[in-house]
Image 1: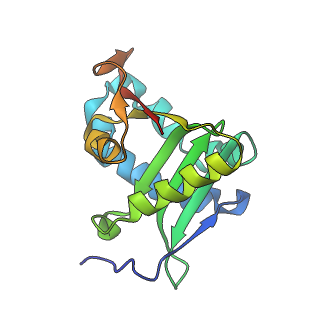
Image 2: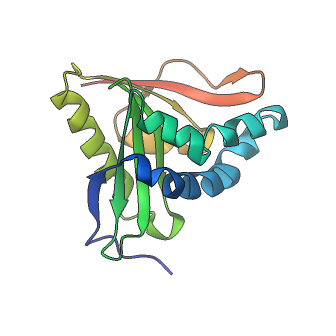
Length: 159
């Protein structure tokens, strides 16, 4: 059953959100990202999404925004690194297909522009997510890239 996202609010994340962010992105990574990557990178990739890792991002040069419903449940997350690189974008499966990823991206993009980004963004898209980023206006920099088992598609967007 789909979750209605019409009353969803988006807020900036803080270090207290690390566990909830990790709990959202790890299962989705297992389902949608790991199948296209070599087994040798699975543990490293999942570890990069652990609560401790996410806490480090939140205390470093990353900015995360969260989509939460009226009950405070986390429905989606977007994370930006260095004010230009889209690092994480995940929406809970039962909230997908309702424009929540677009709303999260719009908020993150505007925050980057407000903090001095001149309209240049990058993302290393999972193979399964490329169409989402194409709809946002990103374009492939090159083809599918494989680095020691890590498979992604480097993309960029210039506004």
